[in-house]
Amino acid sequence: MRRAALIIAPWLAMLASWYGIRYSGFINPALVPTPHEVAARSVELMGSRLPMDIFMSTRRVFLGVLCGIALAVPVGFILGWYKTIRTFIDPLINFFRALPPIALIPLVIVYFGVDELAKIVILFYASFFAGVIVMYEGISQISPIYVRVARTLGASDGEIFRKVIIPLAVPHMLTALRVALGVAWATLVASELIAAQQGLGALIQNAGSFFQLDIIYVGIICIGFIALFMDLGLRAIARRFVSWQERIA
Amino acid sequence: MSIAAARITFDKVSVRFDTPAGGYMHVVDDVSYQIHDREFVSVIGPSGCGKTTMMNIVAGFMKPSSGTVMLDGKPISGPGSDRGVIFQEYGVFPWLSVKDNIAFGLNLRANRASPKEREEICQRYMRLMGLEDFADAWPRMLSGGMRQRLALARAYAVKPQFLLMDEPFGALDAQTRTAMQDLLLEVLSAEGKTVMLITHSVEEAVYLSNRIIVMTARPTRIREIIDVPFPYPRTADLHERKEFGELRAHVRHLVMQEYAQQSKQKQS
Image (cartoon, rainbow over the protein chains, first blue to last red):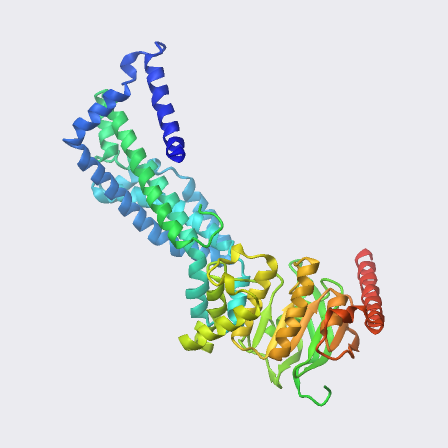
């Protein structure tokens, strides 16, 4: 009960300050729709285009992150495990990581067109570089003692990989996935700058051109909530898989 | 003991490391000794002198630069489950429960046991090490002493003939340390092993060993090999005996001289 109240309190506070700002008189009311207007608009949109927007955006994020992490896990693993390779590849990774995905959009359009693929490429790019860093930082911090112990107990190379390295890598994989999902949602709007008809990013941009502030708010709130629920889901999964850890990241 | 077969043989062993600066560091210098069957040998000397290096060679983690180290007359090719290794930092697998830690070696191809056998072995060592009530606990919930008992149980489960211990009780408080020493003697009296113990503690070396090898400062050589005449089973009251005190004083004197030598080297 107390816990529920503590969870709800900051949301109510945010809602209250939203109303506060709206009715404070300092700001032109036309620039800030009220929460109930936004709520009404989202109900209305739920009956028309919003479900499809949510579906398209979620699918893009899902595919982008899936491909990004599928590559980031092995690459991050290799970089974390082999220090010599890391020395050479690290600057390269940091070079690409620093490039904002939005800056790549013109190139992506040239090479991948304006279809679904182009949007997924942007999300893939963002989640790969976010995930690979988390993964290799984590792997490089694995203490070599566990491998040594396993060897003295008679483990072969294959057994060490399956029974020691994989269990130690799983928490880092889950963290990489979480970070990549966060970055991918943050990059979504950018990826939907590429001629998107549907998607939450497209919804926001279209609304922006017609000065429909309430719809912009609906889109933003949807992105926030979907990302939040995905993260909660991932944390629940993580708790099951890595309950041996002191704390769940 | 002298008639028993030599199980571990160091023959003119030297170890040199390349340093990042481009030079090399001479760690072990022409060391020869033997450890016999069921013997408990402690290796003692100043910290950083190369004791751990010698243990790592026996464990199969590295090779000497010259000379040979043999196990039952054969050169060592790599780590194996015939040599149980106990590290100071325990190395207990944090992602496995206490019981699964003990069973780890028994699930490997090298020493796979049937489920029934595995269960029996786990139960026996959990009982012996006082871990029965923690079978399903995560290692993070255990105290330092319990983790070291778990590491010992896990090493014992695969029935090694040798026990190599690198300052196994160094991180424990004094009381836990004493209790662990007695537990180790108890377990060894039930299932004898050939033991090589690396330690800093003179008290520990005299209390546990048949023989003590005192090493010099780096590059390490043998300073003296000392027989410890007290018969097993040994109990805590041995600490109070006059002969024990005299032997301890002698070993301590040698070790302190080597520490003094080491600090002189550092200054020059």
